Structures are given as structure tokens and as C-alpha cells.
Image (tube, rainbow, N blue to C red; front, top):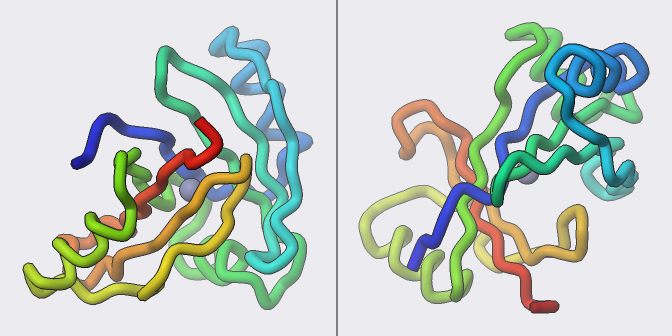
Length: 135
Ligand code: ZN
């Protein structure tokens, strides 16, 4: 079952210039910066209620975030839903005909188990499912 929006992923060219906007203008506090090497990104997190904002900066010109910005510019990159059972949720959406980017969950930032659904079958929204199994 999907419980809430876990985070909104936003592609930025530079965390160094993006973080001050979220902190000084919006008054949010960056509480974690983390590099996810296998996704070639550096992430910065802000808490807004029970939802996070995840800023994504590419660590390589070959990374998916770098390619995304090249094509579409900076902006909203993906929407992440929290689920209480990521394997069951993946099986469910696949049975409904959704194309999966990740057939099985992998480790994302903040120790979450994550899996992406292809935007071709989610009406154009790159969708991430995540479950915090450390809870
Ligand atoms: Zn994400």
C-alpha cells in the first residue's frame, strides 16, 4: 500500500547554488547531503512535514541527472511514493502493465529500498517507490 509522498526529486546543476534558495528563501533546513555512487548523484535533503525535497546534482557528465538537465533543464525530476511493502507494490504495478526500470528493489539514499517505474507507463512522471526497512 502507498502511504504518502516520501520525496520529490529535483534535478539541479549545483547543490552549492540550489541549497541557499531552499534555506534562505524558503526557510527549510538541509539536514543531509549524501553521495549515491552507483547513481552518479550527490543528494541534499530537506524535510517538509513528512515529505522530503531531494535535490540531485550529477557527479558525472554521463549520469542520468546530467543527461536529464541537458535535455530538459533543471526542475522536477521524479516523484517518490512511500510504500509499506515495496516487493508487493512492484508486483502489483507490473501486473497492471507498468514497465519497471528496477525489477527488484535496490539501495537508494538514506538507506531506503527503492525502485523506479518507467515514465512511459506512468503518464510521463518518473515514479519511484520506496520503503524504509530500517523502521
Ligand atoms: Zn528519489
